[in-house]
Amino acid sequence: MKIFLSIIKNSKFHMVIILSILLFFYTTICAISYAENVSTDLSDNLLRLHVIANSDSSEDQNLKYVVRDNLLNYMNTICKNCSTKQEAINLVEENISKFEQIASDTIKQNGFDYNVQIKIGNFEFPTKTYGDIALPAGFYDAMRVEIGEAKGQNWWCVMFPPLCFVDVTSGIVPEESKDLMENNLTEEEFALVSDKSNEGIKFKFKLLEFFTNNGLITAKK
Image (cartoon, rainbow, N blue to C red; front, side, top):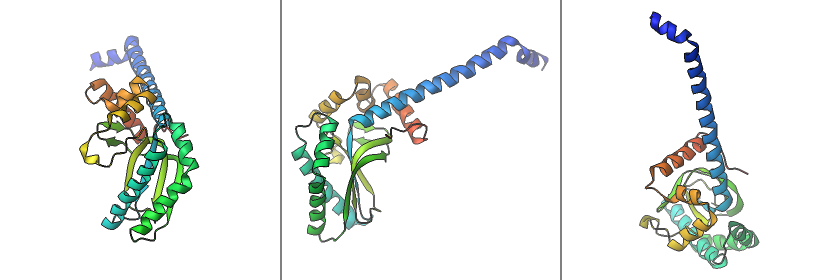
């Protein structure tokens, strides 16, 4: 006990404790800063699609996918030559009434009379995996499609670069989509969302998830 007390009273011991605390805070601040910068950069370079069904009934969920497919077909038509997110956003904003008309017509053609609202904004998304691409939770620019009461399960994808593919069970993202994403992200950001083999990248991704999910950072503009 006397030995323990003498260690505690030792000035060198105090210094080690102080330095350890300072190192901890410094490391935490650096980690948060890194996660916040990466989260913001990802938000700045991606445009996502968020479709919300009227309810969780099988009919409403099936309708959600039909609306999604028709909107994506039109999106692919007008944005096939886009090379930046801003180009894609500009085209979506210019054609927002056409998107609304397609969604409304699809709903009616399938025997429903739900209203539909389409908004362009910055919305919160959970961590999501698209085949072999994974995006951390955070705030992203997106086109949100609300069908009817919009109380059903959500469906997400990335409109730009175009990672929205109908057969999500295949787990395959088209190579041209990956190339476009790689061109719009830094080398480390692309590795963060696409490389699952490197333990260092895995750790950084989990770090970003942790800080975002616990409200310590946001990429909201």
